[in-house]
Image (cartoon, rainbow, N blue to C red; front, side, top):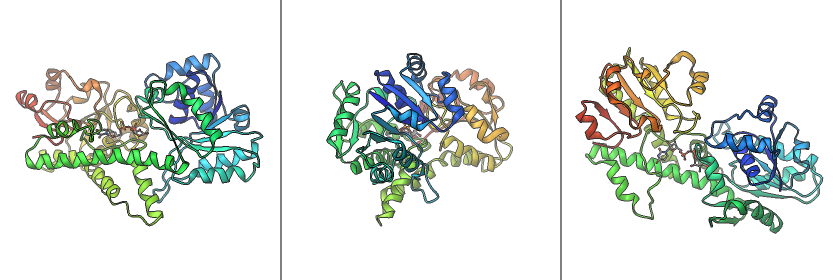
Length: 433
Ligand code: UDX
C-alpha cells in the first residue's frame, strides 16, 4: 500500500518505518527542512532501540522516503497518517492547531479518495473537526479514522510490530476494510483489531493512559502507607498483582510517572471533562499524588542531612524519565534536581543516553560524569532516579571507595534492603522498611 505520514516526530518516525518494514511504500512529510535532510541522508533523529536498523534498510531499499512538500508526499498515498504534536495549551487542553492546520491544507490539495488517520492523541470530537477542516476545500469523497497509538518508548518497535490490540475508529465500511488490510500483518498472532466509532477510539487512548497513571499513583500511595505502617510494598505488590483482575504490571512505586504521554494525557482528560462540566475527581488526585511523589525522595534526603543541603554534593544516577530512552520530558529526576539545587546542594549526574539533552536544558547548573562511578567522587550521597539495567548490579566496593559517605536514596527500589544494611549503607528506597 502507499502511505503518507505527516510529522516525523517520535510517533511518525516509528509508524512510517514500521509500515515500510512490512512492504508498504511510505513517504514521511515534515516542515523541518534540516530534519528531513538528515533523515533522507540516513541520520536517525530519535533514540529508539531497534529502529535505526530497519530505518536504514527501508531507506536503502526505497520503501521509506522523506519530503518537506505535503502535496508531493501525499499525491500517491491511499492512507495519510497525521502524527502531529498536540501540546497542552495554556489551560492544559490539547492544542489542535497543527492537526487542523494540516487537515485544512490536505483539503486544498486532495484530488481523490483517501483515508486520513488521526494517530496523534487528540480530544474526543477531533475526527469530526478534521473532517470539517478538510471539507472546507475538498468536496470529493474521503474518510477520517481515529487510530491511536499505544507505543512505549524504548520498546516502540516491538509494540508497533506486535501490538496488544489495534484500535480503529471509523463509521465507514470502506475505511474499515483499508485499515484492516493495512494492519493484517501486525495482528497475525491473533491479537485483535478492535473497530469502533471515532469518539470511542479517541477516548480509548486517554482512558488507557489515565488508567495506567492511576495504577502508578495508587501504588505510590500504598508505598507511602507502607513506609508509615512498617509494611513492604514489594510484598504488597506481589500479593495483589497475582490476582488476574489486577495484573502484575505497572504496579511499581517510584518517584512518580513522567514522559511525554502520561502527564499530558491525564491533564488533557481532566480539562476535556471540565469542558462538559464533569469533575474527574480521581484523575485530579492522580495528578496531585504524582506531583508529591516526585519530591518524596527530596524530603528523605533533607531529613538525612538535617535540612542542611547547602554545600552538599549529590550524585544522581539516571536522568531520563525511564530506561532505554534519552527522553527527559517531565522526567522526575529533573524536578528533584531543580529542588535540590534550589536548596543549595550541587549535583553530578550520569545517564547512559540522556545527558546531552539535559546539558541543553540545564547547562552548567549541574556537573556531568563520564561514568556512573565517576559521578560518585566525593559525593555525600547517591540518588537513583532511573532504573537503567547497568545500575542494578553495580560494583559496591568501587562505589564505597568513591563515595564520601555511604548513603543511597534509591527512587527505583533496585537493591535488597537487608543486603544494603549488611554492607553498611544508609539506604532509603520507596515503600520498604
Ligand atoms: C506510555 C504508555 O505506556 C504508552 O502505551 C503510551 O502510548 C505512551 O505513554 P511511555 O511514556 O513510553 O508510554 O512510558 P511507560 O513505560 O508507560 O512509563 C511511563 C512512566 O510511568 C515512567 O515515568 C515510568 O517510570 C512510570 N512507571 C511505569 C512507574 O512509575 N511504575 C510502573 O510500574 C510503571
